[in-house]
Image 1 (cartoon, rainbow, N blue to C red):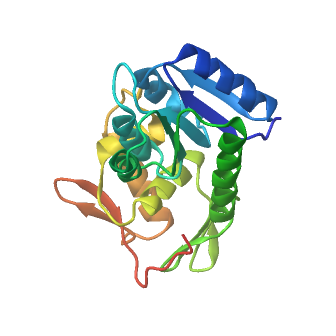
Image 2 (cartoon, rainbow, N blue to C red):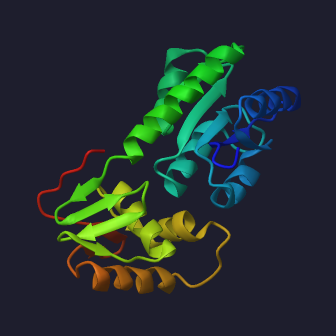
Length: 229
C-alpha cells in the first residue's frame, strides 16, 4: 500500500464521493477527496496525486476550469472526468480542458476501475522513457539527468523545475505558473526565487538551455529537439 497510486476525488455529491472512496480504497489505492474545486487546488501540490477523478458540476467552479488549473500545476497528472452531461460537445469541452478520459453518470464501478488502471498503466509506460532534448537526457522515474553524457546532480527543487520546463517546452511559462507548479499555490515568497533557480540550472547544465522570454517568463530550448513523449 505504501507505493500505491494516489487518487484525488473532487465530487460534491456526498454519497457518491463516499462510495468512490470505499471502492478505490478496497482496490488498493490511496485516496483523498474534496467537495469543491478551491480546496482541491489548494491541497493538490501537497497531495501530489497520480490521478484526479473530477466532477464537472461543482458549486464553486466547474470541472473544466479546475482541469485547466490542474494542468498548469502538473502537466502530467491524469484527469478522469465524471458528469451527468452526456452530449458530445460536453465531452469535447472536457478533453479540450485537459481531461484524459471521460465517464458519464451513472457508471459501472468495474468500468471505472478498468479506466483508472488503463490510465495509470499508460502513465507508467510514459515515465519510464527518457526525455531527450538536444544534449539533455532525463529519466523522470529515476530522477536522473544527463548533459553531454555526464550525470548532473540536481536538488529536488531544481529537478522539479527542470521537469516543468521540459513538459511545457513548446511554450513560454510565467514566473507565476512556475511558482504554483513547483513551490505550490500557497507559496508567498518572492518571484525572484524562480530567477535564482533558473540560474542554478543554467550553471549546472548550459547557459543557453533556458531562454528568457521578455514580458512572459522562460522557455526551454534545445537543438535537434527529440523526445519519446
